[in-house]
Image 1: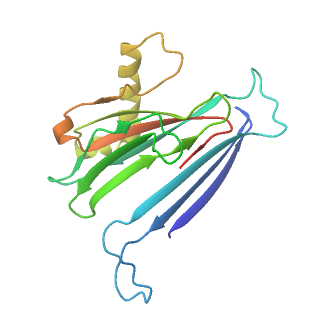
Image 2: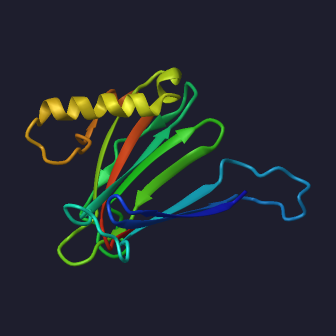
Length: 186
């Protein structure tokens, strides 16, 4: 399978979330006689819009957070600390690079567009993790958020703390993208 589209209408927070992904294979043999080489490239898109006709107590959500977990396996695998920027036009908000013995070098970039004063924002947390920890990403993410709350107990929203532990050996990173309602992320 090389693409997917999902449309979620969440009346609890009054938003419609459209997600789509596309996978392209490098050196793809259209005859089907050869297996694709490398891991391929992925493109993800998230679009958040107000849900028409939603009656939400306390009002419609102003933002939505999406967390992407990127990890690599193998002794020579690594992920670099994401480089973050303001991101305007064709400049990414964040880019991380890495390498994996089975797929080679890769890059993950986040591009975002918001409406009005609201901007798409990116934060991250990463480091060196054991394989069994990476397979339980939801538990690992809960622990990271607990850690972030200890560092900033007055924070009004949960955000990853923009830290990379064991940066020279990192093999996993969470990227949190906060999308304003009416915004898009590629």
